[in-house]
Length: 175
Length: 182
Image 1 (cartoon, one colour):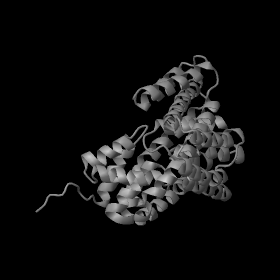
Image 2 (tube, each protein chain N blue to C red; image 1 turned 45 degrees about the vertical axis):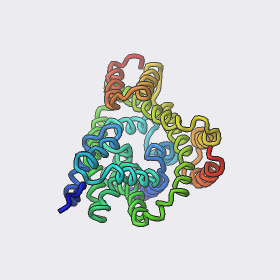
Image 3 (spheres, each protein chain N blue to C red; image 1 turned 45 degrees about the horizontal axis):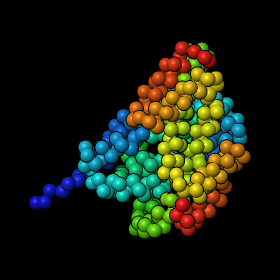
Image 4 (cartoon, chains in turn green, blue; image 1 turned 180 degrees about the horizontal axis):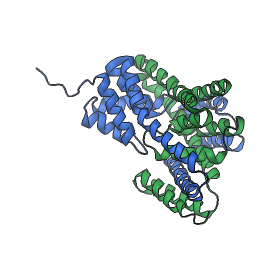
């Protein structure tokens, strides 16, 4: 139990500090640790938790407390929440206090520009891993494709897409 | 007396403001955050908001998470930062836990399983959309595309752990992008 909490803390502190480009870039590593390395849940469970967190309001890192809850109950939730939000927040506080150093546009732009393609690769990896896990059969694949197309082409509220997917899923058609 | 454009929130106002933001921000809190902070409550001017957001995007962690910390810190120090962050994540944590409990309880019901499968498929589609939107600005930047492909291959193809991959690729990428501007 304690070992589990320590492992959770170590994993999510690391993810907190390398989550450049937002939380979705760390999904593949989260998936690798939680499913492949520690066998705390199946890949399908991981994808389901991610979907639940997407359906909830708030920042897109909310899958993390949910993983903590599923792995080790309330204490797991507390540990993962502190681990994932704490270190990056402390870093933000330190950086804002040293704000003038970061204001130098030349190397700030260089770092931002250099991290952008890495974010793209990581989010694409997240999308691939999650899609591979959830899409069994052509109906679910079609839901993913339609949801992606609508989200790219229109400004439809994300919640409508999730509700649509859930409603089609509910019928069990093609599953 | 000169009327100032922006107002200074108390710790409690910071908590309340971000609590509402957390509760109402479905699928992307950022546009709502700007509306609340700049237009509605006038804590920051548009320019200050953009500048703070720029730094938050540069740092690791969720942009909106960092933004809440930054705004809280600016007005009320560490106490303000904690109040804003806790306010932002309090309600969503309760909501995801309730959804998680429902999922755990009914996961053997066929209809519920099918419903969550559909939900997960739609959520995956949104992730695909996000990847596409992020990738669009890289068009005609062959070196950037190459870096993105290497990262993608390392993670998806070779299942490499993220921390060493990032530590190796970030300096290379920053150097290349700086040199070739591509």
